[in-house]
Image 1: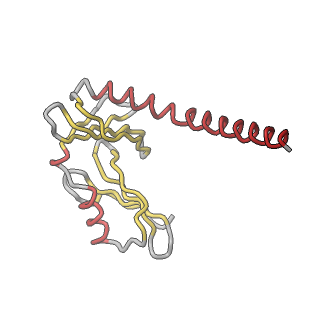
Image 2: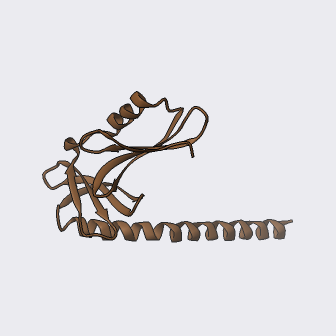
Length: 157
């Protein structure tokens, strides 16, 4: 009986080890992209603190970094993967996540908002809102970061 418990424990530990290895292998490219993006962004602005990093995949791949500069101001940096046009904006000069959601709610009646994230298309910083409509279809709504104007919609997927 002890032999079977020992074999079972080794099997569970082996599976756990494999799962941990797979997780770290999956996260490694994102960490490498973040390090590269922060290094590029530091050529235009000095971060005192990086709050968030994500990769936006729209018409092109864009790395988005949110953080604070050395003056303590909240900033957002958009770094397109294939161009050298790095865009830096102060958070106070754009609309907030909640204001972007309010823009959507005024025009549409979303059943469930799944995600709201910053992105950029055609060198225009934007908020991408991914939501489900009443008939449970997937929709995307894009709002201009600075003006709060609607840019485009992708509906009923």
